[in-house]
Amino acid sequence: MKLTSARASSQHRRHTWRIILLIAIFFLQFEALEIGLRDYYTPDVARSSVWAPLYEFRQYVFSFLVVFPVALLLITWPRLRAHYGQLSRATISHSWGGMFIMQLALYTCFAWTTYHLSMEPDKYAGSTLPLIGWGLLLCATLGASLLMLAPRGYWANLFRTEGKSIILAAAAALLTTALSLLLQKITPALALGTIQGAEFILSLVYHDVAFDLDQRVLGTGDFLVKVSNDCAGYEGIALITVFLTVYLFLFHREFRFPAVLVAYPVGICIIYAFNVLRVAALVSLGSSFSPSIALAGFHSNAGWIAFLAVATGLIAFLHRVRWCRAEEKQAPEPQKSRSAASAEPGLVDALLFPFIALLASMLILGTLTVDFDYLYPVKVILVGAALWYFRAQYRLGLGKISMTALATGVGVFALWIVLVPNAPADSAEYTREFAQWPAWAVVVWVLFRLAGSAITVPLAEELAFRGYLLARFSGQAPSMNGQLPFNWIAVAASSLLFGILHGQWFAGAMAGLAYAWLRIRKNSVYDAVAAHMITNFLLSGYVMLTGNWSLW
Image (cartoon, rainbow, N blue to C red):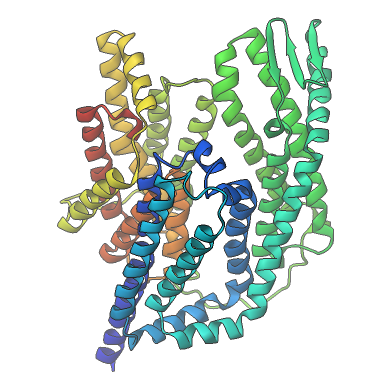
């Protein structure tokens, strides 16, 4: 009986990884297409070519493509595990090889058509027929990709049982797109309010405040800025609205409706007020200290700092205010199991605090830099101090690096080099900056950068993602070692978040998948840490040998 159960479990894991691999191949195909077209598909080409209709509505298409899968995931979340069980069973007898070949053939035709239309943009400008053909090829490729994963009967049953959910998710995506259009209509009014509010704050400190509402110009002395629509505050409003929606959906049992909906107007007003303060602080910083820092580091990071502060404050507010919380119901205390057990005392702080220190140092110190991260050694020291403080909690089982961890680290390094493009302008900035420094300063900075890349960053990220997040998403207690049952939702979600954190979302997500697989296979966070360190160490060597500093 145990042998049969073990065989079934092994078969389940094998089919699960096959599904993940096929999905990864699908995304890799389109990532390769994007890399190949990167030098040809420019905004100027898009506006005057066959791609003009898509380029004109790109924001709305992107909004729909982002919101639709997220909404569908949230709506079907309670049934997701059951759907995956059906998918896993459907793939056992699925003859996917032939459909895989067909998908490759259709993708090849689609890629060739895309290249052909992009290489001769003027030839088909103004004609919709090539674009229609391109769209049909895209739909055929997507359809073949679905049939490559599972047989037609599975998808027919899925669409039949979740048809209403799909329609509801599409409606939510369309509504979000319509709201973004409305937000763009009121953006000029938001911009004027931002200028007037910032001018009032500045007038309390400066006597020479200059502003022009018609031109949207604000400043003091010789430092003047133009408040564009992007600085009007609508992005913060959209972010806090989406955040609250997702949070209240996931934790709706903990709150009292409709009272908790007061968080929306409160959050929107606070984030808008923070944006006014941000613009006023930017003008003050540029006028009294450094225009370059104000327009570069502060401008890009202050908004994220404000969003994180408001989001964290709102969560604390909602959980502390009695009339927003749901009434706690007394329930019989269940028997504790490992999946429901809490983590060891102090372990959660030890897993998360170094990563929090890493993020906080990136955001806060990033506001004080322009093009070159000369404060990077401070980040290494802060994260290193956090790791040292919690060192007693880390039972990584340091020892011999397994061949599996070594191979994974090398593989992720190779994948990163292929998928992540070099930015010559950023690399040139490193070279110019180093040319102005004394040799000893360059050596010290590079050594700190190497220590951060190969030691503190892998430790902080793996402790947070593979030590805490992967376990929590799997319904297990966070731990450094021990068996972690495979949960494809946990692996996919933690890997996707890991990819988003790294900017290059696809390459980062693939790396996250590899490290998550290693954590589950080797029953230890140490192997994931070792593989991550190997990847980053090889990447550091590649950067220093080739001068492609932008990859660092």
